[in-house]
Image (tube, rainbow, N blue to C red; front, side, top):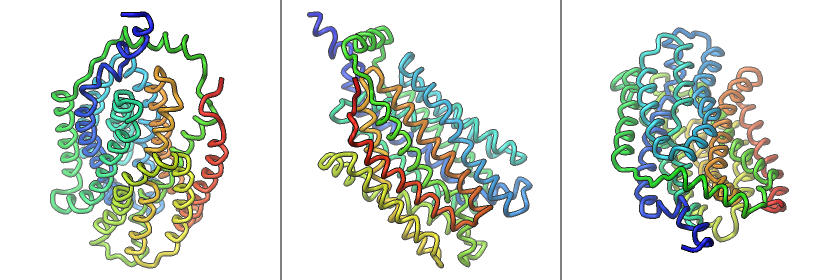
Length: 415
């Protein structure tokens, strides 16, 4: 083998896993679906569970609901880059197994919480040791060939969206059948199935020595550095996407209660409204991904940011729950093109030996948005009114579109 050949595909992680990445993608889609179902199914009944744990006043219920929901994403935001680096060192499959088993255990323990403090701590632990969807993006983003990474990440995103769609529906129906606490046990069981499938079927050809040598070679052969301004803009945009989507969802049950929905139908109605956003995203995710391939990811990102920002405004003026459901569905359609396009740009902006680490940072940014969204929504909802949440998040998205318009003019790599 020539020296030049030795620097290329023979030591490439993606090349060694060319036979496995499609099957791994299928398992990761299922695993992401089940974990997102388990994480999002508590949205419709979270305020009710907080009340069961001893919180009485509406303001406290709103604030504790936001804190409890955001705690998981805070934990994941903190540890995603760490798990990404460990994946580069020890392999991607161990990170998937660790996340699935950890989340299955903690999700079941949440059903045994005695007070709201335990609920928050357990939700935080789920984020610190979990993050299956995040680990999946690192695996598929680094295993898939560069020219197919966008498509693969889009398919993976569809699994997560499907989980986000099914979760609120499950959360709106299951507690009335088996109780709120038993719903958490069911969620843990679903994740355990994903853990078993991951252990048995996911394949990975990982060679720490070869990958280390590849990173060293790439560092000496490619002196250019990733443009930090572009990267920071992409990470900030990813954070804003999740912030906008999650700012109202943890307290949406309270918002819907003001729309004359009967108390006994509140959880079910909230589940339907929340599911509309994910359903809208599922309808357009593939089409917007194809559009990004034709006209460029930046164009899709900026257009979707503007449209989503504008769609936030009328949500503050609805008088019936079905009006909110329609608007959330339309917002989901415009959100769908953002995260896969951002992930594709991050993948291409980074050199091969940095792609896993950069995708880890991307996950951290996204989960930071899921942390900031519920907290921001809770604070604004308590002090300025629930309607103000829509105005603030819409303005932030428009501002992010302006920033993205500036960033697109910068070179992807800066020497």
